[in-house]
Amino acid sequence: MEPVVEKSSETISTQDSRSQAEKVFVRDNFNEQMPTFKETLTNFVNEQMPTFKEALANFGLLRKEINVYLHLAITGPKKAKEIGEAIAIHRTETYRLLHHLEKKGLVFSVLGNPAKFTAVPLDKAIDLLIEAQKIKIQILENQKTGLVESLPAKEKAKTTRRPPRSQLEMNVDILEVLAQGGPLKLTHIMYKAHVNCNLLRECLDFLIKQGLVEVKIIGRERKVYAITQLGVTVLEQFRELKEALPIIEETGNEARNQEPYLF
Image (cartoon, rainbow, N blue to C red; front, side, top):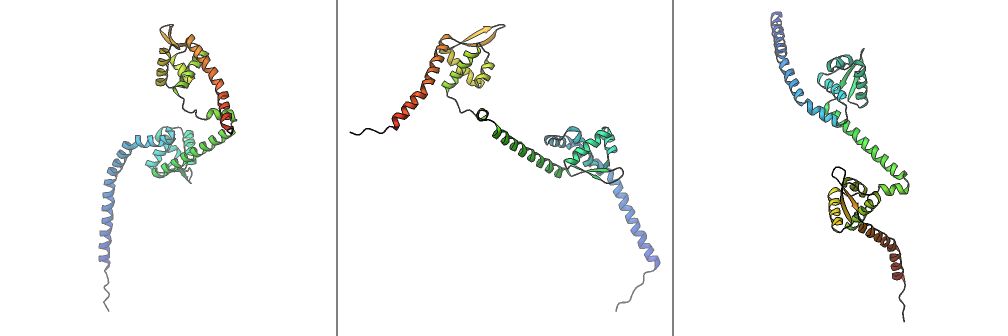
């Protein structure tokens, strides 16, 4: 059995003094380094601040909401009065902004008198904002489906996309617009005939060469396009042909459906 060695009170006192001295050294060393650490952290946050603000704005947060959230994320729990004073916002408005951020899950309050507010970490905040955007998109898609289903048949037909038109159909649509609206500027024809600018120029060049459309200068050298008499004649012939087409098609279908006569 090993002998028990009793430590004298003098030895214990020496060890306690050494332990206390070590604690003081660690504390003083930490206190010396702390300002440097805080300064480094502050510089990093200030450098990245525009990026943080832009990212949060893209998720739908308002400028003042972003300022409140980032202030809390950097400084830690704060009272509403302290937040307002730090970012120069009236206390009433600060409470309103904090309430909005709480509803979004980005800030929560800590019980106290008065209460303090804390921001959730940035990565969690972004996850919450992404989820909120997904929910908004889903709601909009559901609303669109409901609105389209509730539209009358004629309105539904208007919302459906027009099938691609042939060159002939675009030319006829342009002639129709000019016949109904008189001399028109290029942009007016483009919107009324539903033809993009480049295609419209090609069509007009073709119609001018054929003598169906003419260019006129009115006012202060304002260039407009008008249908010619030949264009009106061609358009009327096309209308007559279009009216006759269903009859021709129906007659052709009846002939094809008839059984052949066997001798």
